[in-house]
Image 1 (tube, chains in turn purple, red):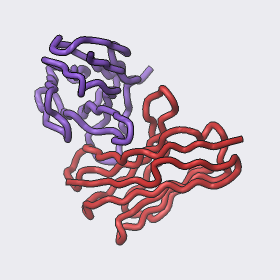
Image 2 (spheres, rainbow over the protein chains, first blue to last red):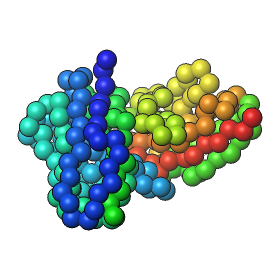
Image 3 (tube, chains in turn red, brown):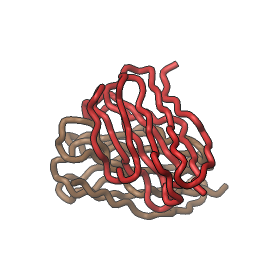
Image 4 (cartoon, rainbow over the protein chains, first blue to last red):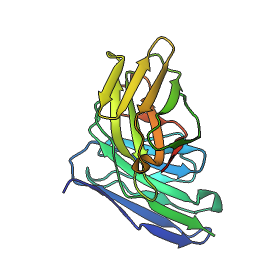
Length: 113
Length: 114
């Protein structure tokens, strides 16, 4: 089954404790992206990747890191989480040509205390 | 960069009524406009999209219209049903970048009452 997976689905952590949210897709997509969803603000892009070893900042990259060592995986790293990073996070992937559907993962609800 | 504005933020209709959600965009080079539906607790999923070479596209009860001159596009849902209740997002690409960097609107929460 073609899909985007994320883990964990739910996470409660404390300020300053490094964490990683994994994202994996099995559709051979070159393009992958991370979004955060907050009430009233829609989906805001954090980072995106055009292909292996190619990443770039989105609209809200502060406090996040990513890596793209393999085509299928695109982990999101929070080196020192803060309460303002409490949010719902979505990973998405697609073929890179405009007009191709972006497929979203199931989401990760993160709470930073 | 691209700026996408979406209205209204919430929309309540009675079952069977029509619903219209409007978005404006800023980058005249944008050429692809998708709409995503997000049901409660679920992931966003593409429901319809339109490209800049057409003015309207229909798929059963949903349709999207595009006015490139005015830089706005709209989602129309006819004969609404309770299962249409969800948050709807419009999106536009970050100009003619040649790749798939989408900018999303802030979302419209549609509530269809039986």
